[in-house]
Length: 165
Image (cartoon, rainbow, N blue to C red; front, side, top):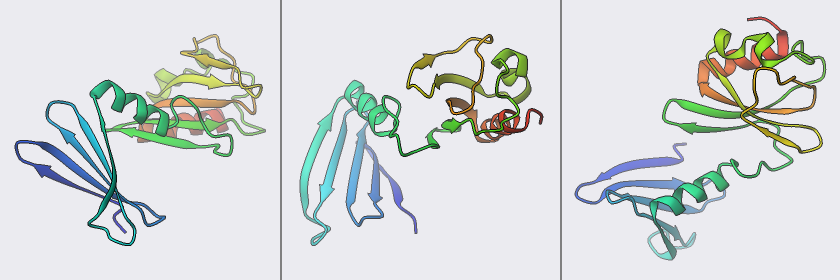
């Protein structure tokens, strides 16, 4: 089932209709001037909007970050991914027995060997390291936030788990 349908709105912008797994219908209109309008429709009458919110560009980006888990990752999710065109951000938990545990980001050559970048690390004690350097040690149980194209993120996860490509 196609959950998101896109359509151009000439002279206005672009429309995205999201039919959620729970049965809700949302419509997001991105105006050419940067405004976003979000409409929520009644489940019993899919043509009847029951609420609407208008956001400016900065507000929309903040809300997108919140919804996408950039500000807070729910504790029950061990792997989350967010897509920006061809770029992905994925949360990846370093499993027990990972060959990279105890090694540094630079020692593994993650960026050079995979093309992906670790942009943050959330340690077991929930301490966050934003933009970790090459000297940062990868530990079991930590959650890595990896940025890159899908194949590069996949290669990075493989390198972390197996110690080689």
